[in-house]
Image (cartoon, rainbow, N blue to C red):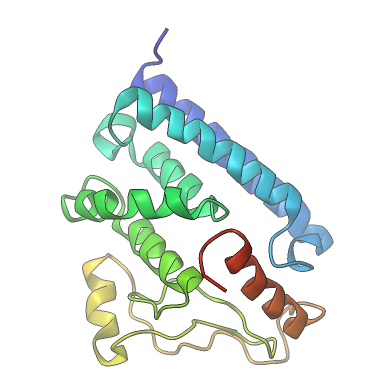
Length: 199
């Protein structure tokens, strides 16, 4: 029997809480940062993405805020954002989610994050500067951004705060991967392996 939107909302919220709890566990031991993408984390993300695909196919529409509430809608967006080993799934959702964000049917900031995530993984400049990661020197920063002069105008259009700097942390102080160069190289290899970039 088909689930109601209320039941689907509860399920989506449960899935993302499971995801976040597991991530916290891996982060507390440092395991999360040892590789470009932890295998167990990847497995969970793909499992959750598959369930969301089933929901989208069954309902033939996205679980928008008016259908499941903001928390569950955000959970669905996070599931998409986390399904980074499935490039076609993210790409397939981008255009419709941008339209839904413009119509205020889904939280705009998460859609901006999706747009940027696709750009970064494909090796293109970000649009909104929402995606940050450690570079090969162990510095947390936002990768290249297009048209920096008008960046904060674009961010405002997606309900994002202004950004003062593309560099988040200096080399010392915050946690850094044990081997930033190795992690950076693994990320480049991963983008090719899963199909984000061509060799």
